Each structure stands twice: as C-alpha cells, then as structure tokens.
Image (cartoon, rainbow over all chains, first blue to last red; front, side, top):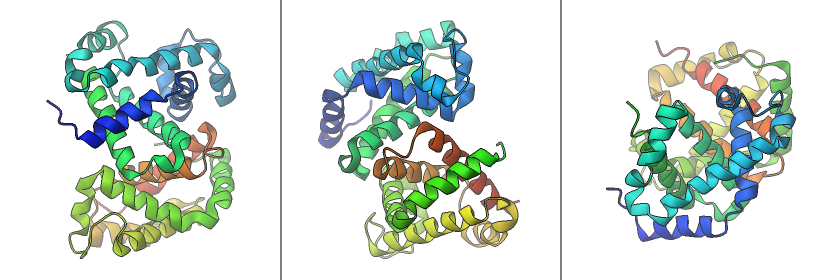
Length: 147
Length: 144
C-alpha cells in the first residue's frame, strides 16, 4: 500500500482539478514522440510523424494525448488503490498493445516537464516530488500485469 | 547514445545564449529539486553541515555543477576530450554513480521548462536531452 501525506493528496487533487486535458495531454504525448522518437513505433497508423512540426500538429496524436491524460483520472480518484485500478489497463498494454513498460517512464518524464512549464513557480520542489511519486505509482501499476 | 548533429549543437548553443543570464539560478534550483525529489542523492553530501535543499552548500554546489554544464557547452564539438579532467575527478575522487547524472539532467530540464516555458520547446528539449546524455557519457568515460 502506498502511503500518501496530506500534502501529496492535496497537491495531486489540485493539479488535476485545474488540468487542461486538451492542452496538456497533446503536449505531453507529442513531446514524448519528438524527444524519444522510438516511441513512435506504437503509432504506425497515426499518419504523418515525419518531423517535430508534423507530430505537434497531428490531430490523432492530440486526441490520443487527451485520452491518455484522462487515463490518470482513475488514479486521482482512488489514490489508495492505484494498483487494482490499473490491473485491467496493465493487461491491455501488455497483451494487446505490447507496449514496453519502459515507455511509461518516458511519457511521465515528458508530462512532468509540460506541467513544470505550465505551472511555473507553483511547481516547486515539493510539488514536483509529489507529482513524480504519483506518476511513479501509476507507471508501476501499469507494468504490474506484464509477464 | 547517438552523437550530436549540427542542428542539435546549434539548438543547444542558441538556447544556452537565451538562458546564460540565469545559469546560477538554474543550477541552484535544479540542485534543490534533486535533493527533494530524489532523497537518495543526499548520500553524496553527508559531509555538509546542512544538506537541506536551499542551504548555502547546496546552492553553491548547484552553481558549480551548472558551471560544469556551461563549460561543456563550449566543448560541445568534442565532449570526451574537453571533459577529460572532469571525468577523472568524477571517476577517481567523487565516484558518483552515473545513474545520478540522468537524475540531475532531468532536474535541470524541469527547471529549464519551468523558467523558460516558451523557449523549451520539444525541439529544444530533444537537443538538450541528447546533449546532457552525451555530457554524462563523457563524464563517465574514465570510470572503468
């Protein structure tokens, strides 16, 4: 069981309460595809990913980025049971999507950087620690059902 | 990983010119975040009187580290040769586990995004990530 401090719970709730999913999601996913181009391997049918501009402007990337970010909602709603919340999604990512779980960390690093840029001063060291801890738990849960 | 293309070097140098006035702030902020977010890194600083993230020692050390990064920008065309002395320092004296270079790089980039949200675009991000990775590799050159 993950132990959350009051500060961590409040921080995560706060960040997600004002989250602009349609901005942050696309920004995080497109950044991941640009910074770690091998992650494009999972999006062969997304059309034009030939360069950074194409990736950033790609509507399928944008839509999927939003979807992924909303995927974090269930963890936000149930921080005490993230592992079980993601059991099904973990199986999906392993058995159907065949995503290397190392990629989850790459995406979460990009999300951290996007949020850092968005929140500015508010995203201080303690907030960053809480946010990264939250993402690490989600990433761990998503990789849990792989075998 | 891969070597830096001409475009990568150009992007790093251009972005560096933009942020050069804030290098010390970036350094001390990145250092503080590293100590907060990755508490295991504090093990390298047990000899400090005060290991808290905003202590004078931590601030000074962040500035030192960032000075090293600034130096590396000037040696971007041959990091291995340019960072030879620093590599020997880290290999034989400091013996910092290279996994920590990745951690510090991440913190530096979080701060860059934080302080320069408009400029730290995905294109600059990938160039900087490559540069910091190459820097880390050059730093670990003399380890074994």
